[in-house]
Length: 150
Image (cartoon, rainbow, N blue to C red; front, top):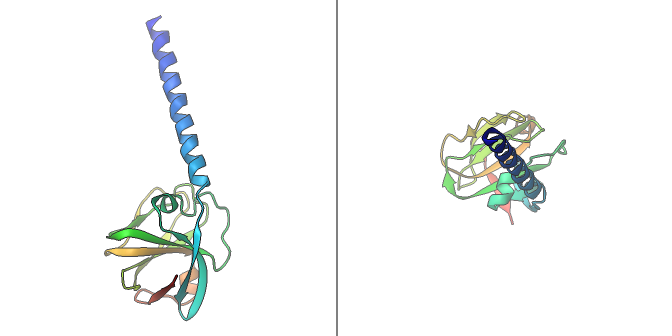
């Protein structure tokens, strides 16, 4: 009887954890984003803007595609050594880490579904995720300046 009670209790706890995970995924799926215009390489782009914790946590998760010049611009609360990962993200992306002056410090590839954190080499205030290869295709490099139009 004691073994049955233990197994039944563990099953209920496990089901509760699964339900809690489902709830957090549903909350992430419901996050809405603003847009922001950035200027990079002499051209302006209208991209999604992740400025809150919930928006940054959601990022580009669950998306199956991203238009050619679409992306997501992240603003952190303070300048920091930032890291990005690709949990629940299907699209191969590149991330540009950007310092407080708008200068790109790193451009790094991100692998779909990878839980490995890809980090900046120095403290940054922003990051920009675009389709993989987008920065190279547009001749955007480390050291280039990004301007933010609010």
